[in-house]
Length: 493
Image (cartoon, rainbow, N blue to C red):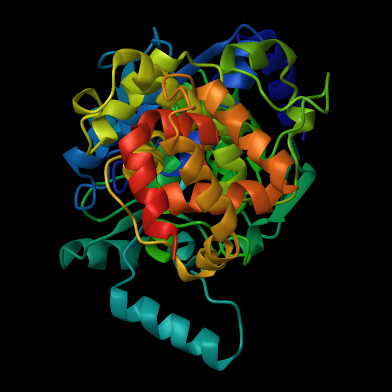
């Protein structure tokens, strides 16, 4: 324990270094991004460094397309990383697969010191072990038999060219403890870790827990912040650090992201809502997604009511004590709220530019530039995301059947609609003035003692087939007199 305390003190004297280490075996997950964001905030708050490491040693599952998606996703979100000085890198990114010789060097050192050993147990032997453990209702795990091989047994295994894995001796029945940045005091006993862990497979490929420790050490990582599903990995990695005489980083374990029905958010179970590409493709602003992900498990310790902040604004006030221990709940409505808040900060031209790629209609073929600006300003408040734009403007280009649940408002407003048609036909309305058109509708309301839904719903639904949307004066202005009359006449029985 004394060595562990010494390591903690040493870490505090060093430059704070955090990292994110995704594997290119799947799409970029929201949880990975959120973890990266907390690491960025933690290190930058302390004027430290944040590194990116691609853990691509799983040769069968690692794909170039996933790698490209991960890197593109981080860049889209504005998550930048620093360049490590003491380790080979590619555009500032450390690639784990290039570090085989360094990993083997450490493996050989552990074998020489007898801290690691070769286990020649076959697959059949290990399956028999598991069967006997299940029969005895014991926890399944490796029985550490390789620690006790005699030289005679080892010589026999080698003579028959039996394959082996390399395992690390983590000791018997000892508590591995650490002070977690999020969860507080933690302790896991080695007997609960399933036996001595494999650190190198029979084909020479090192395993996750070992590679992570070696790479974190060489990258001078001082703090490892990641999901709470890594708790047992942390115990194993502390044991590996100790075996290698490496400085032990401080650890913090984040709550996972769950759906409202208390399932861990995953691509397999929940489809594309778990991946970043969905939000990029549907027209969410990256700043909004970043803000949302940070806020899922974090409360600002300076201003607990504050919700809107950029990544750079969060640097100054970030405190890991504000990270919750409770699971984060995926909430698309909350994300949409954040996105609307950020859309509201944009100019009408910026909103239009962002919407263009999603539009199926040619605005220029129907509207003047002033009308387009009026339209965008009118519908922007209804956009959860830019890909919603078609649904917000489609009724200006095509007549849409009134839904059955809204038809009753039109039926009940027949006298109102007839009155409005009569006034329009009298040429007393200026269709070039949206504000004046709205005033004329208000006058009709006063004359007929109508207000609220009874005044606005019949007209709005007759013109747009929906109960919400832009100001009625704007709708009439953009539809024009002829089309407005045609739609109103259509709705009058």
